[in-house]
Image (cartoon, rainbow, N blue to C red; front, side, top):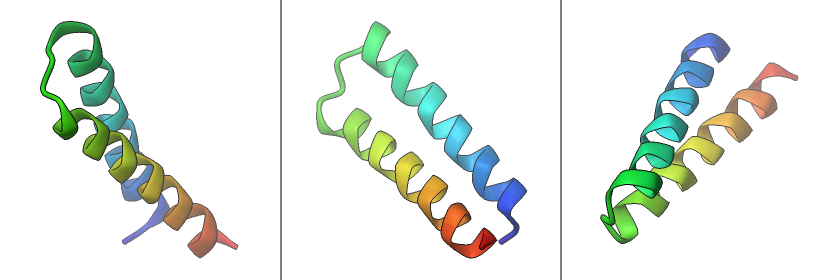
Amino acid sequence: MSNRILYQIAVVLIVFWFIGFLGFNLGGLIHILLILAVISILLSIIRGR
């Protein structure tokens, strides 16, 4: 995967997390989305260097 795709996935997951955090109470699912977004960002940073 290219870095651009990983960044886009991370942004989408963060947006969904934020919407879920404000609007809905889905429990652990919201935090899993946040963790996936952070992992995507970290992978793109690691692979980019």
